[in-house]
Length: 436
Ligand SMILES: NC(=O)C1=CN([C@@H]2O[C@H](COP(=O)(O)OP(=O)(O)OC[C@H]3O[C@@H](n4cnc5c(N)ncnc54)[C@H](O)[C@@H]3O)[C@@H](O)[C@H]2O)C=CC1
Ligand SMILES: O=C(O)[C@H]1O[C@H](OP(=O)(O)OP(=O)(O)OC[C@H]2O[C@@H](n3ccc(=O)[nH]c3=O)[C@H](O)[C@@H]2O)[C@H](O)[C@@H](O)[C@@H]1O
Image 1 (cartoon, protein in one colour):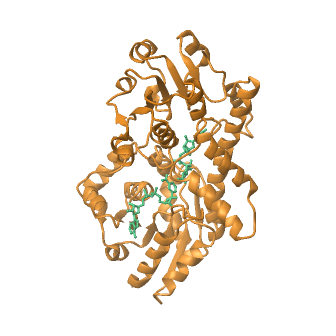
Image 2 (cartoon, rainbow, N blue to C red):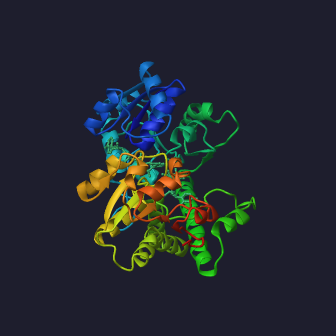
Image 3 (spheres, rainbow, N blue to C red):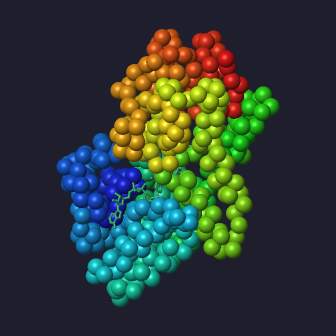
């Protein structure tokens, strides 16, 4: 099939590449000229495991191309995917200007039947608004489909190629049939393609993300309570997670959820509720607790240094909002760095992939190390913000010899408390006893 994808970010580029992988002829469009130039030169502008291999293979095969021209995109694709940003607006709602703006432009350029697929995460009713925006500009026949994306960054290719489910919201048999044909190669193992109306599809996406954010937040509250009563959240987590109704996944406490989606999507669903005279009390609590959780280590660090953080040398391991990505949107590490700088501490950070993005934000206000050990040289404390695998089994003797003092604040519970006690560290983690 001929496919066009508008927007070549994390979702658009993965969608385009993976659809080319199953033999489709894909043209990806982006408004960002420098990004398109890079893509045309064969450079993947983001870090996403496996993407480079598929990208190169499909470019070489001539099935994956890039352009800045929406007009070309509309000519090429039978199906036009919108993978455009829906960032948080000032009032917490999803900013639909990219999606509706593209819809208007599409309306102006439409010359024959197309299926317009919304892959961006958008509030209930957006498919109707996209339809209206296009219809204002044209009398040509078209269908709008809601097809929310559930991939995770860091596993985006794997998630796209082997999805647990595909949700298609459509009221057109013609469009539904095309979408099913496109996605059939990805669900050969038997996972479902779930067909529903557009509004239910749009809400499915927000409900899934908000439920997962709530699950994490609930565990963060349990972790905080564990510290008050001397329980160990890792034991509680395993004790709970073995109940198949609860499940083992997404029960890891930490310094809050971040990323480009959970924070904005929880707020957008909360705002959608308000707009429709419904108070999502539970989401209000999730937002408040997560904001607090992102900064939970700071008072502890401050207390450890007896309020004298000024000129202390603090090392940070992990800047990305989670491992296996260079994405720093809403990363808890950013909040911690801001607070440390306000307190007058100096910060040296190391992250395997996200340092360039953080440098763009903080410039020379913080230093960056070339590896995890040079980050901790002469450090008065180490803070762990992201659970990259390389941080899991460090050489503790090397840490002790390089640091000014053996002090670790672990926002991701990487180490066994008893093991680290034997290593002679001061060790503070989330929901477990503090050592030292
Ligand atoms: N990042 C993720 O893991 C996931 C994101 N989503 C949703 O997918 C949507 C896109 O997210 P990301 O890919 O992360 O965004 P992104 O910010 O990484 O990429 C968006 C791309 O759209 C381009 N763009 C903006 N306006 C344009 C226009 N008028 N024409 C052509 N291109 C244009 C930008 O230059 C950028 O390259 C959002 O609604 C997000 O909530 C859904 C599932 C997963
Ligand atoms: O809509 C989206 O953009 C995507 O949002 C999340 O994916 P992602 O943000 O890439 O990452 P997750 O692995 O879900 O992690 C999100 C945040 O929760 C935190 N988290 C996750 C799991 C956990 O047990 N504990 C925890 O604190 C992570 O550290 C991270 O900050 C969802 O998992 C995807 O299904 C969805 O498509």
